[in-house]
Image (cartoon, rainbow, N blue to C red):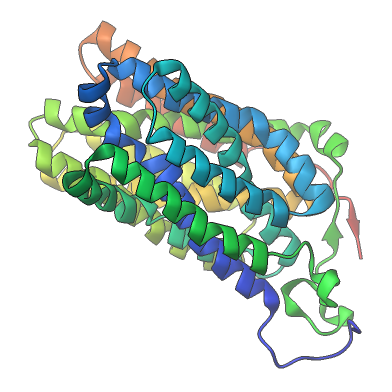
Length: 412
């Protein structure tokens, strides 16, 4: 098929974006968000401590971070189709295995395996696919996926709770595992393709190479790792992620301690997920008007501003303002990271480059809740935690705002 042949059909990349929007929502909902629903019933039946249960989940997160780099290499070389397909199958099987665990070692083995699968089916490979299929309209494509997946907790936490109330935790997890496999497996296998050229297409669905006004940027992994700005970008996102993870995990106990009733606190925490979606909707069109560096710096600054509202005093009004500002900034942060990596370093080695940053973000995300807990235990208050969160977010914003990107290696 000629690359110059115009077509009236919708660009195939949009079908891929739609498929990934569905599979990412289901995968995040079951592999990540549903876990919190089953902690209490598993604790009651199996007699394991809270730390033992969450330890398995944390192990999965750490392994997912460690697997990000080999997954990135695979996606760059072979595409994401069969990686995500097999990841879906094994993730479904492992969730089913989770429903049958009776000893702690097996539980940890299951979550170690789910960590490997998470690296293969969650955002990193999906973002790499979008980086290959889109250039000018990349932010819109990423927004489609993250808009849907941003609702994963809103959908699957109450769904998992409803299943739990009606069927018990083992049967509920079993059903979720089967649902994960039968829904995500066919979409990954039948819809995903490696690159537009395989279908005789150009990125964004352009019918003629002359239409491409933006030079294509190609950084190798070595180029990126030798780029000072890449490491500043990684540090900035790590600081911001450290701050955001600390406040997200401890948000409900902070509100309860501040005099907000538990039901209202839970509602406020859930509303952050909705505002994440709103933040991504706002970010997508703005990303095409401003440089990625400027947008990232503003997102981090908004995160700090939202947290500062809580530091001045906790009231229902303050909580609402925090949820709106912080939630929108936190949601935009996910989209901003994928967008700026593709913008500054290109799509050819996107998987590998992104995976290096993802590893450090995973370390930040798993250490932040523990660190915030230790600070709270020593201070007897969340005030020092809030101050530190604001300092970290402002440091991240300043770091990006005053840094200059590495000279681009562009080819027409």
